[in-house]
Image (cartoon, rainbow, N blue to C red; front, side, top):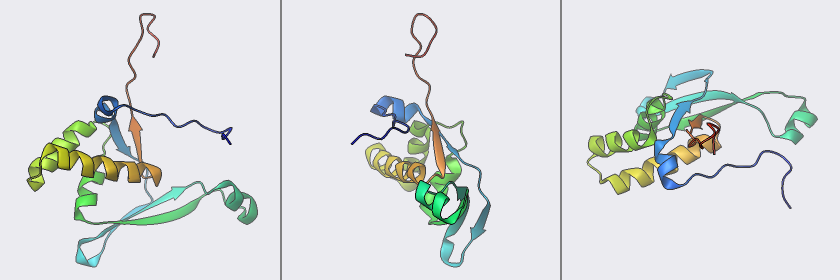
Length: 131
């Protein structure tokens, strides 16, 4: 059964590498002992929670390790994924392929949790509109 809501946009590899991830507004950041980093965000709850509990927003806290924090903090809305991957590979002495897999998987998790949004420039057609 198809959902009548938003359709997910899919990107090919090149589009995904050109995307610019942007960390969404957060409620707070907290350093934790042992090097973890907590990020708390406000998100819209699923429909049944909104209806049943009469909540428009809920706070969720996510713990990031040092590597996760590094990627999360690189999500400034200006730096593309390809650059984040290259920087991550250089900083941790990884191949580009290893870094691309790690970073892209983590970014997918961050977007699914509502911590990061991706800005993608779509190619323009001859009429000036996006294709």
